[in-house]
Length: 458
Image (cartoon, rainbow, N blue to C red):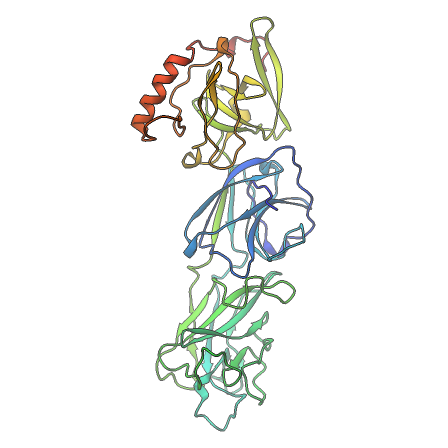
């Protein structure tokens, strides 16, 4: 089920707890979410965005990631005003997920500010460090002919095996996993949460006991793609440590390595057995993101917007003009998407098919996304004839077949991003000419009354 998203927040992932509240279908709130270094998931898992307010966890729907971890911008909608949320989080959800709430695997999160949120990976990797050795203690410690077939995160500098990894504590939903990458294939050494204790895997190891620390001998039960005996000192193999999603002991992304690999080392040819080599820290693959609220609309803004009062109220006052009764108050619910046309200083005209043109203060309006995403269109018509139509690029509801009140229609200019059926091209120059000609012929140029002069407007 696609759910809806909108504003920002920082939440220490370890504190992301737990109960979900069904979203209200009354309105949604559009916002732009950007991610970088966030890679597509495997195993059918998906990213899901959440607005968090107290104990409420409200889904913003599933989002995708760019191939190769490139920047991806998405416009999403939340069922609550995200400016009032405490945090925004992105989780990894398993395939065929039947739980309406978020998983514990938070990949990005951030606290809400007045402008949005910076979304960060929940683990500080700035101090991570470690080393490893090649050895096969579980095979036959007397026979050293195949000792380059084992990878252990162990320090033997003092004689006795000691932990060789300096790792931060992980929040719920994550574990560490070691990998020996050889012959072009990753072989797991096992998953663990404590570098001073054994990992939970020995499927490739021999029958002898190994040190009580993370590591593995690759001496039996090898995948068909691996030709034995394994030689990690062949000059083409690597040692890697990843951070892996973990949900009740299951990785929702599958058995392969996750894309966050903060420690790694290209093992040189002829690497000495039982001699430590340093794992290099690489945090360039750690994802990040941001959530931006719609920019506060200025008195010169034209385009689609959303009712979003500065005080967080559930509705904003608007004003409708008629020759018979003058200015009369009208209430527009927070989150309603409207078309905005600038008018007097501090005021704009807003339009929907159900209300026609209403005057609203600009501090009650926000824009939908960044200028690059404001390519949505509005449907206009003269009596009996539709002249412009289109669809909102980010999925906003399009107003169909509005009847514009000719007596109080603002001057319409500069409708960039719209198209007209029958125009020869959407090239900006040709389009502007085509559109301008039609509008001059079909639309009145009379302006609405001065908003500032309306009595009783607060």
